[in-house]
Structures are given as C-alpha cells and as structure tokens.
Image (tube, rainbow, N blue to C red; front, top):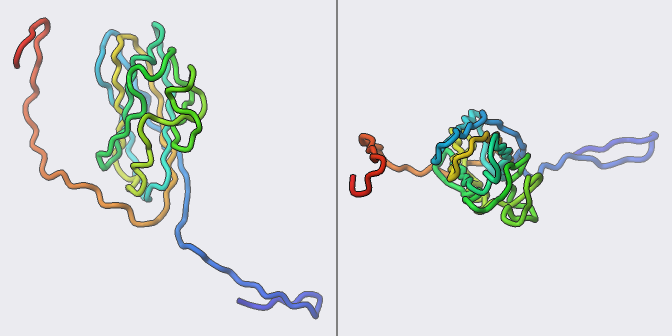
Length: 196
C-alpha cells in the first residue's frame, strides 16, 4: 500500500491486491494429419506429444475431416480422444454425423449445439458425445491419441488439434495400471468363422 500525491494536495491510496496466484493460459497444439486408407475399414490412430507442463482447466478438440472420394463418409466415422492418463472420451460414434466432411468443427462442452443436432459440414462449436471435462485436472504433459474408426471403405484425412486452457495448480495423480505384459498377435483368417 502507498500514498500518491496529486497536484500537491490531493492524496490517493493505492495498492496491489493479488487474489489468486493461479495463472491461466490457453494454447493450441496441432497434431499431424491422419490418413484413412481406401477400402480398409477399421481403426487408424494419430498421436500428439505435448512437452509443456500445466493442469487442464478446459479442453476443446478441433477436427477437420475431408473425404477424398465417395460420399457420406462422415456417417461411418467413430472418433475417440485418449489422454496421456488413458482417459477416453467418445467424440462421435458411427451414425452420429452425415455428409462427407467436418470443417473446423470445435468440440466444446460449452457449445449450445450437440454434434448429433448439427448439419454438415458442422463448422463451429458442438458438444461431443461425452464430456471433455472429465479430463479436467489432469496434466497436459504426455502423448495424446486420436482414435478414428472408419466403418466405411472410403478414404479421407483427419486434421486435429487440442485447445487446452491450463493453470499451474497441482494435477491429479495419473492412474497406475501395473506392469504391462504383451502377448503375441492373433491373426483371424479370412472367410473362416469359428474360434481362434
């Protein structure tokens, strides 16, 4: 606190009050493009490694999906986001969207429109199927994974990035899953129903 003298006679009390030492910031982290191969249904993943530190206070996901041939490929997409803690959020399920593209679609819990109520190309903010806020209080540091399930056979690309608001508070503790033991891969033969 201190006193400031104005015009030789008027005094003004001034001071600096700090209400909270928590510092907030929002940053966009952009991942490499994911390519969905032609005539290949199944899962394709993309990863984004974040080396910055911070605790999540708000998380948004931006996606642009472009179908390079065919039509209505969006209908066959299922997209899930995995945090470095292993927490998963279903962004869209197969059958939730229509059309051949998502353009700068921002999945935001605070959006007023659910993705299931939007229209192609779903530009702007939409709510994902599950809330991204379940990742709040986790550390931003580590490898994030976008899992794309393509139930159709048309090729396309997925560009994605994370908008993360974070602060310097203590993050929740990451779960411990114990020691991982990896088994050999099991191959399922074509045109052969039964037990493997």
